[in-house]
Length: 301
Image 1 (cartoon, rainbow, N blue to C red):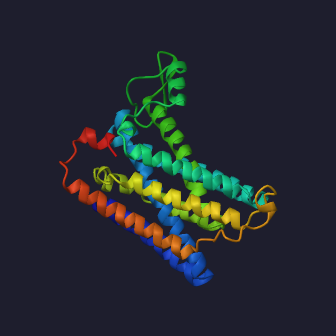
Image 2: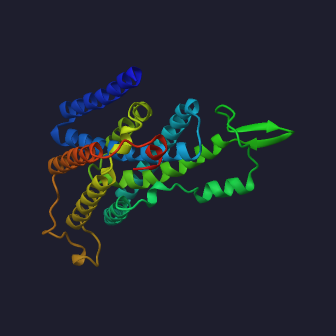
Image 3: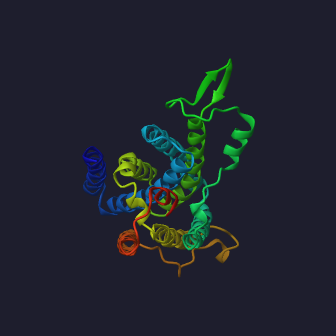
């Protein structure tokens, strides 16, 4: 616990120090953009941990192997987000109207997340198509063989459950990358800040997983808070797209002057406010509820 706490403090301190450096070198605007982006990405990454926790429990990953699985999952998340950041930057440079798509997608995701937060459906993890296909087509063992993905037995190469875990984590990372990259592009258009905010958001997640494993389940309103944030950023993107409009069928291809650009300082205030209210409300709600068992803690959000 002490080691995890020290590592987590170091990573958070490094992000804050980097943000301070951006403030000093590039000015208040860019510094605020990084801070807002980092907080948003960190919040989405914590939500990612919920799903990791469910996957680990449902697939019966031994405690000793969870650290290796988490490390691979975080590396996959970094690779996928890096690819989406590059694609997003290219799309924005080529087509300014892509902000309409980003904004609409975030609003849709926010509505969907809010609906899921009000039900217990997300508690039941089900194998995705990729995993079901693997189970049907690839021979596998029933037992874990360390962190090995395959093992040779009886002259046959068999897949281990760890390979299933990696595929599950990878597909989860893909879905979260689809949400996180448009969200941060709603706060900054600088690819360097987008990349560094994601880097710092993913640092320390492994330590956070083991440090506050059961505490994660107490953040019962995190999904609702994230839905509010995504909806806010989605609306911000749509307003920005209207302000910079070039589509000929929208206002004749001219800027929509009544559509204001939400300043980054206001975005930061909203982000911090939503996260504080969400955390406090979640802890107050959880303090009045019975402590979850190990099983329910791993399958509840």
